[in-house]
Picture 1 (cartoon, rainbow, N blue to C red):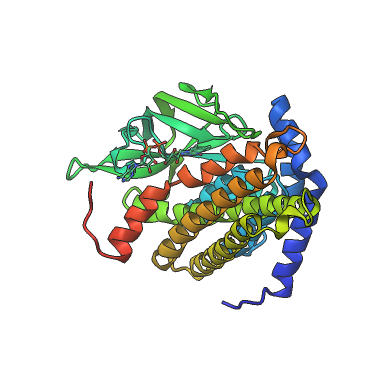
Picture 2: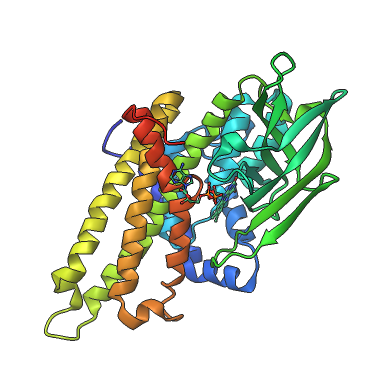
Length: 385
Ligand SMILES: Cc1cc2nc3c(=O)[nH]c(=O)nc-3n(C[C@H](O)[C@H](O)[C@H](O)COP(=O)(O)OP(=O)(O)OC[C@H]3O[C@@H](n4cnc5c(N)ncnc54)[C@H](O)[C@@H]3O)c2cc1C
């Protein structure tokens, strides 16, 4: 890993940034407020090769990796237009299909995921399992060669925009009778698959849904990857998810930091701009330090993932996601505070970031569950649960 970005990566960063700034926060907020989607932005990003930059070239992708997709996510979020489905569609679902899908699944899904004309959601969270994904009860049973799925999912993003949801379910091991995780592609128009929107207090065009699967019948090829290696396959999708969550938080933090610094540089109520006062300047400076450190950790995670080291990528991916979320929460909070009353006006449009940034602390994996992972895996401490 080099600390100097290659000319190709620098050029990607620049072109994504220019593209996203063309849309900008006002466009994103307006879509959220009026209840419409960011379809034109998504499709243009797909056409420009940004969405599928990590996917294999032979299936219409850019043939690069998670490092590049993290650049796309970071720059899009840094323009105030953090498209949440980038975390899900190309990063989780695209990577899993590219690595473990059948030839037919790859041909059916990857070109569309890459150019943005297809979108996939990802469903693991359940109402009664939450952070404890070992506790999920969505079950797949065989009926001839078909699968029958039953279960509930909650907080699943973008189901109304998606063509299918990659559902984490469980199958029964015929020898041991034990339930083990498995991944299923469920088309959003499948009979007996229903979803309802959850009203969230988030100013975001992408919405969350509760899913109801009641005897959803799927063909044999709905299973993605092997029934016996679902955990390691899941890893292939969850590390990118954490890298992208970190990239999204880094981008959002950069957006807020730029707004905050600009404001306090230009606002003068005493002799000097308020940004000269250390009570205002130091939290921004500390935020910048945290932000840069989390970005480095994110790049380390992406570099290891792209080198094929799933296990090696897990620790930095989790740490990057944790650190980026904490940096982003602190920066957004200080930006709103430093803008005084204007931090809460509709005109300045900063206050909605307060709730948006909290997503990065709780999803896709909470701050506490990352600390549990680090305590147990990195430090070898005993489990409390
Ligand atoms: C905007 C948004 C989008 C989302 N999109 C998706 C999606 O597309 N797909 C999907 O599958 N899920 C999605 N989620 C769900 C998200 O991953 C979960 O909200 C998250 O994993 C936490 O689960 P929970 O909400 O049930 O909280 P709970 O598990 O009930 O946890 C509540 C609190 O308790 C803490 N806690 C729980 N267990 C422990 C413990 N052992 N030690 C210490 N603290 C603990 C948690 O850290 C958390 O702070 C989304 C959530 C949000 C908010």
